[in-house]
Length: 280
Image 1 (cartoon, rainbow, N blue to C red):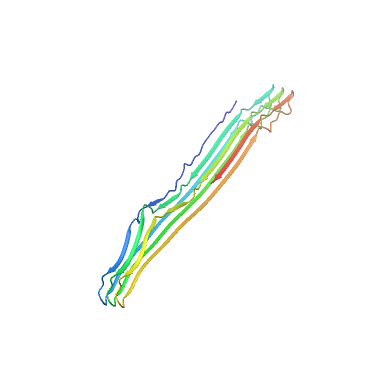
Image 2: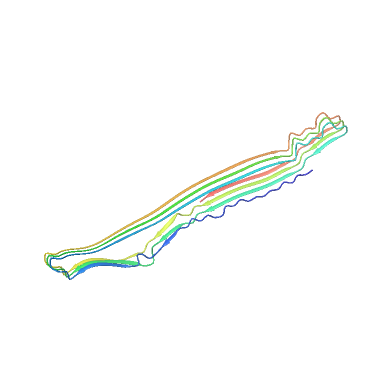
């Protein structure tokens, strides 16, 4: 009897893309604040407050568990205590197993471009003993947070046996021929993390602050305040565990205590194992 076991399996986790995109033209604008021709003893305020807060938070978590268990046996055959000859021939085993895991993360992008922005503030022709304020306060806060966690566990356990055959205590001859073993195992795990993210800011235009033709004893303030805060935070955690356990046996054959001749021919074992893990 010949047992031909051939299994070729492929496990693939397709590309998992963590892509976050935020775009806009919030800066493609002009801001101006001013006081013009104010009266005597007056109090005048022209104030613009602009606050932009944009945040992208991307979290990717991937857990991949591949578990393959193979047990193939054409051995443990017996031809014992026959009046004539006893003969055993076990079959061959051919096993092929592939496991492939591929995970990819794309970059995040925040694009606030698309134009220029300008700011102008001023007081003009202010009255006697007047109090004039022209202010623009701009606060921009941009954050990119990217967290990628990947856990890959690959486990293969193969027990292959065409041995443990017996042809004992026969009146005639005892003959044992065990079959051949051939196995190929491949494990491939690849994780592409990407570069994390990028921020694209617009072009800054003209900024001006002025006081023109102010009145006697007047107090005039022309103020422009711009604050920009940009943060990119990228965390990558990758764990790959590969375990291989292969037991192959064409031995432990017996042709003992036969009245005639005793003959044992064990089979060949041909195997290859390839493990590849790439994180980039």
